[in-house]
Length: 82
Image 1: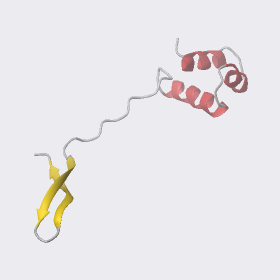
Image 2: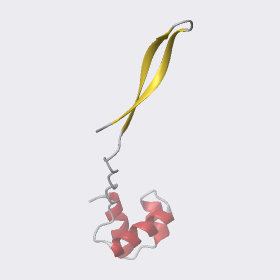
Image 3: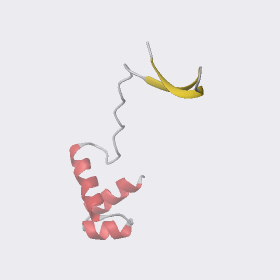
């Protein structure tokens, strides 16, 4: 059983949030949040992070140029994915 589930279970069995926070070495606000999340969903486990859209990507790569009269320069060139 996960620590979050144990914390919520101890609160459901009658322990105060303060006692549960001390017993499982966490904040009282975290215990309150775990109980709230359990009321909203069936599990106190955190949700998966939403995926970022993949329609645009950008690469910055160093590119060395030789400029007459100046010498070699390093510039950053940006490419986008098709």
